[in-house]
Length: 383
Image (cartoon, rainbow, N blue to C red; front, side, top):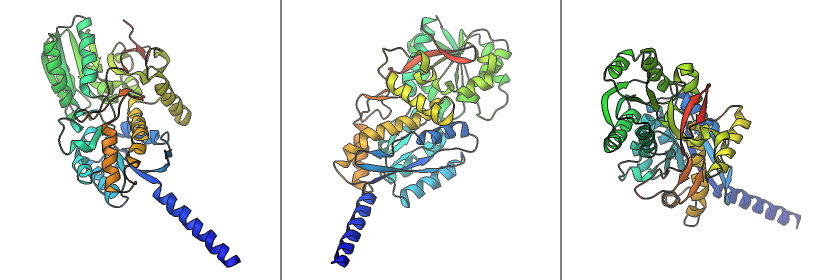
């Protein structure tokens, strides 16, 4: 009798363990926590600690890897996560170039990829590969619309453009140029710089020589401060606009007093204490900022929000996908892709997300604000 009870208990334990294994969702995360773009990847890695360990009836395992900012390692790690670990979804990699490099492998593995990157090229133009990719930051057109509106309000008729010589900078020019033209704003100079450059004085002088009403810099964090600072050093006195990529403490730290007065269109999380009550996402944004500050002792850069909002998307999508298939299967991954694409009115830390078959970013203008740098901090522009 005792032996039978022991066997029954053992059988029950084995069943419980089996159910536990079955009830697990595996999420791969590739974050460049070392190397040249660690300023992006480290906050993204940090934000994983804020993601839920259980979603619906499923425990969630996050398999976090560092690609050392190397696109080749991004590809190798993606293959490892897809092939060996059989992940249900991928968050990452960091950086536009790294993410573009693994896009085809995520698609071939029929695994949803939530990319916390700046460039819209990861999801546009939509095709069979990009069907599996979802961008967890607002698309450039959403931010560009705000920049053009701010320029128009300030009477800007001509602008000098300088952007990174990479997918981020190129996509920004392609997005901004037609919007500016439609608004009656002419681009009178168009320059590029590399992320690792230490001087862009030559480009700055060409831009100033064109005598534009305003300048527009398409850069990210610390490197966005370089052309801004050197435009100021070279004598430029007009307004300098920045993308949401500059909504980072590193931009202010590197630029110092030279970036005072910069005009930046970006997310509310950069100005948490000034968020109007009218914004539907205020509660979610403050929850994210508070949790990050408590865990890491500093304010979260925009890059952390890309990972955090990826988690919110999965919280909404995983239970829907689980109605159709079990995690760890091709069917579940396909259902998860469909559920992500069906996201409607999701309140996220950077705004409200509504995905469609053609829009795999889904952010609209709610959550987008115009900021400036004042006394070494981001401040909401209220006029």
